[in-house]
Amino acid sequence: MKPNLRIVLLLLFTLAASHFAQTDPAPSPSPSPEAGKAEKANQRPKEPERKPEPWDEADVKTMAKQCVSLETAKGTIVIEVYPESAPETVRNFLNLVSTGALDTTTFDRVVPGFVIQGGNLYTSDNLTNNLRWRAIRKIPDEPNNILHERRIVSMARPEEPNSATTSFFILLRSADTLDGKFAAFGKVIGGFEVVEEINKADVEGEKPKEPVKIVKASVSVCGEQ
Image (cartoon, rainbow, N blue to C red):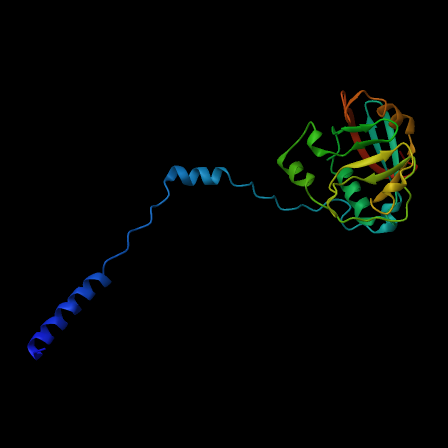
């Protein structure tokens, strides 16, 4: 190849390469304003900052002196608690009571002759966004040596470990299959006839047709109810 022709070809190649290098790629389509609004609308609401609750810093000795009164439409149930065996479960229960979270909730599960269950915050007449977040706050399992016998109060949870939140149950008879698996944390010491009356409800499956409401729950030193 002649030198002059080689120089001409080299110049043409350089110009072509320069043109392609400066050509921008096709721009990606931008999301429309409507699409952005839809995306924001579907985002999960942000969890509110957790506020301190009354029993967060209480020691076992202090909690052990407390009893809980559940004033229901059928009468009042009094429960003593056992933080020596289940400290975080008791702390959670006392906090729920003291903050009013259990007020207007119902006993929404009844198994005749066996158990009544309450504490479902979604049954509250005063359901708020804060209560919805409180309803899904999980606590650790605290299985212990307390036997699941008549009058015992224990923490309800799904099969998944460490998944208890706010629901609790009261036993009308012994259930040794629950021993060492669920966190028993208290005992009914007054108003057990109210528990028995609630357990007589007409049910569809395990759902009472007319759930009994907890009108007001309160904490006080045992003997001062």
